[in-house]
Image (cartoon, rainbow, N blue to C red; front, side):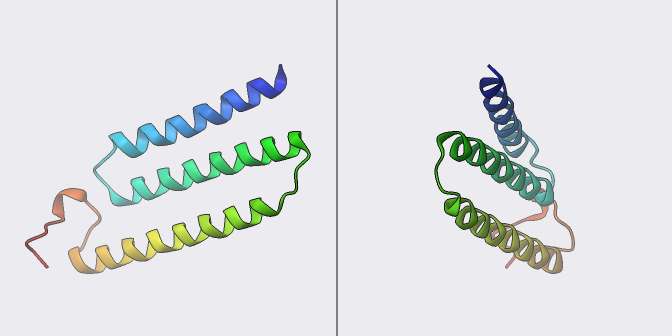
Length: 98
């Protein structure tokens, strides 16, 4: 029963991050933070699944490496956007203004 409650909590974490990612479109930074939150919830789900199943934890290290690379790439894009446009609003991005 407790295992099911933990997985339910993790799924709720993931879907709340997905909801924030799909609904809040004003700032680029909020979108990046919601993506990191979703990656954290997937990591927690993998930890629970692999520990309950008795599997090896090497895949978690690979997953964390990719999550960190995704976060660093997102922050570098954010810094580039702020330097180019002056803010991180989605409304200020324009394809015509290169």
